[in-house]
Image 1: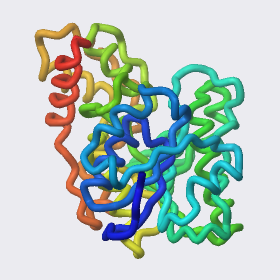
Image 2: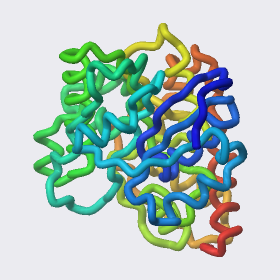
Image 3: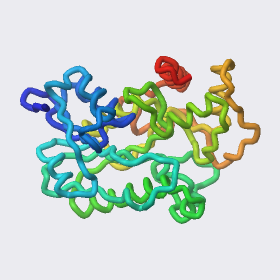
Length: 315
């Protein structure tokens, strides 16, 4: 049960606490002295709860709640009394959802007393953008072309783009203080009992399958994402969107990098670079770096992910 009485950071609410990123965020918030109220889809499912309840200080400063994102009463119960909200809950799938627009809502009550909402969006809400200058590195001003995404049936990208736009509109209407983080492909060691979509894609690459992610533009370490989320929560000057990745690169760069690091694995290199639209860049997330974030080098992220796979018998 969470208790904010003597917690230096006070009480915060985290939606999607059981996921790949959410689990690390819960861990880091507890490490920093926060009282945490984390939501899960099914409180009876140990696959969502057991790894969180095992974290240090969970017994005294973590409370898990079951929440329905589309039920205002359920959301109110989760966020009431919290100083801030980390809104991570969102389905991540590479398959066609029943309703690609179902993830548009940010139903946080305007009179709930929340100081700041930090929303987990994605670089998927930034690209493709046919109007973006050909020689310019993608940055926070770029928005994905929703109609183009629909034509290509990239429903996850449609969902993330509509969700972020709806959140900005809702925040402006309700007077919420909103900041957004837009991570690239997230890799790294996982605390969860199973792998998510991005880890599954990477695992398939290591097993010899071809990686077809033509909108790939870079990675970020899972441990750097919660650090960035907390920095945005704790920095009153932080505003707007925040691209979050170690570097901007092309898929050919990534697969070659992995193949070079693990020559013993059947990693398929990409023979033809079809991502001329990606302008490579080091340190593209300068707004987060100005807040003190130091991104984990890609080599370390890749090695730590593979080590985690091996420790769990997945490769």
